[in-house]
Each structure stands twice: as structure tokens, then as C-alpha cells.
Image 1 (cartoon, rainbow, N blue to C red):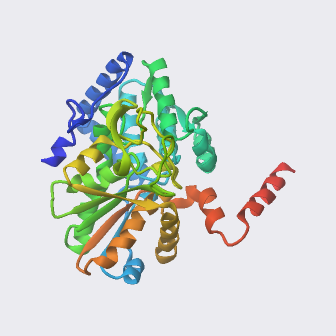
Image 2 (cartoon, rainbow, N blue to C red; image 1 turned 90 degrees about the vertical axis):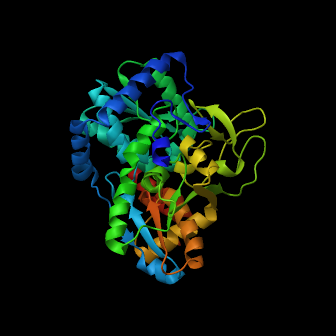
Length: 418
């Protein structure tokens, strides 16, 4: 079964992709983490605590919401939205953060480090560390630090130390590299809480397991509401955690089609150094980086290229190895959405349904808007609204606000300085 292949706890390979390519000092750390995961995800006491906190702390199950207005406006398929934005801290990221932190605490770790791009993974890590009484350090590229400044503020309020990474392109991949260096320096008392289905084994398998709660809930919810499974599942893809969370429980049912949407940025053109996008499935090449083998946007010399996206969470040069495997076997179709399409979809969903999707999730909305009119009224699309869009205020407002948002901010800054 496909689900069993994607839970390969032995080697962490999915076809030719995945694995573990790390310095020798990290091998025993990764072995210990793999062994702890294998032990605890089958442990009844651990699973009971996880289920209790999923309900009482995260707020699961999250709603599956029928987008009646959007469905009527577009015509065609019925559209449902899985609202992970209603999780505590505002996104799906807390699903794997809680699971990993519970394992780390049982392993005797006192300190947790994490990387973040959009800030949602860092925020969720900071929250669970506060809950469990663990020290928290979050690495964030300087570019993301600036454009997601509200999340930096909230992480600090939760007691986390946010480290601004100024090397490289100053985005997500640079934060990952900084976190890996920290783990090498602090091998004993520190757990690296990696934020997606990328990285060395066992991270892709482990985070897939903790995120699969999304798809399990959708299965029960859609049967109750519509009496059938969805015909299509749609999710944005950066590293791939929210997509794997939605897709995993349906992978063995061939009647359910799946679409992953990457960041098309300003266009899929690129030069030898920089891409105007982050669409790895379109022009990525196999390579090894950050501890695993996957597709990466790279030049002819194997150097990782800079990327571009309106959404910080999708602005990543690599992608989860399970995602590439699912593409290669034809189980998931991949496409991309441009920045201007994303902003239009963000506005349309907000005005139609009263829901602010994160800019990452709005990439999935773009594809839903294209697909729905081409399908029949009997067909169902479920898309994962993986986070809420209030974190994107300083990106969205200058582009969509009718008034002069910059002038408003200058006025507020002046007031604060008095």
C-alpha cells in the first residue's frame, strides 16, 4: 500500500529520494530520534496525551466548511475548506510541533530549536515549548524576519529567542542551515524541531504521521456532510507538510485525485543565480542538501538558487522527498500559482466566505478557482486552508488597501516614538 511506503521508518527513502545525509556527529542523534518516534507513536500513553492536547490545546477537530457562496459564484464542483487556520497559533504547523515536542520531552531534552519562514512553525514551536516548559530558540532568515514581523513579536512574547539569520538569501533554507549548525554544537540536550516533511530521516516520516490527523478528520467530516469522499484534494506545497497532512489518508483510494500547488512567484523564468519563483517540480533537479535527497532549484554547478514568492512559507528551494515520489508515480499532479493570482484569490475567498487564507493557502485557492467551473455539480473539491492570513498584514495591505497604508504606518511609528 502507498501509505505504508510513505511511512518507511527503516531507511526514510521514497524511491530514490529522502534518506539521511548528515555529518557523522548527527548520526547518533538522528538514530535516537528515529527510535524514540517508533517507540512512542505506538505507545498508548503517549497517544492518549497527544489526543487530549490535540482536543484541549490545539482545538481539534478543525472545521470542514462548505464554501456555498464561492461554489455558487464559480459554478461547477462543490468546494469545501478544511480550516486549519483555526488551530491554536493559526496554522497546521502546531500538529507536528506538539507531537515532536512531546517526544523530545520524553527523551529528556531541555532545549528546542526550530527554523521558520512564514513564522507559523516558529510560533507553534514557541507555544508548545511554553506549554511544556522547554527553552526555545527559533532561527529566521532576515528577509522573513522583516516581512513576518508580527509573528516575531508573538514568538518573543511566548518566551522564545528569535535569531535573525543574515547569511545567504536570508530566507527559509538559510534558517534551516543555521538550525542544523546549532544541533551539531548542542548534540545532547537539544532537539531540532524541523518544520516540514523535509530534512534527514526520520523527519519526513515523523511529520507526515503527526500531520495525517488532517486527512483523517476530513474523511469523517466529508462523509457526514456530503455522504461521499472528495473527488479532488488541493493543497499548497512548500516543504509539503500541509499537503501530506491532507493527502496521506486518501492515498490508497485511487478515486480521489490530488493536486499540489507551488509558488509561481513573479514568473517561472530564471537565470543562473536566482529564480523568480519557487516551483521545484517545474525546474528543480535532483540533489542533496540540508540532509536529504530531493529536487532543488540549483544551477549547473549544483549551487542552490535564490527563490521568490509573495508567501514566506513557500519561498523554499527544496521540497519534501515524499512529494517528489508521489509526482514520479503519478499519484499527485503539481502546478503553480503566480503572486498576482494569489492576491486575487486571497481577496475573493475573504469577500465570498469571510475567511482570510494565509498567502500560502491562497495558492491552493487559485487552483480551486480554476478547477471548479470545469467540473460537475456532483463533484467535490476539498482544499486545505492551512493557515489564516492575519500574519500577512504587512504584505497584503500595501498591495490591496485602498488608502495609503504606508502613511498610516508612519503615523503610528511617529506616535510610538513620542
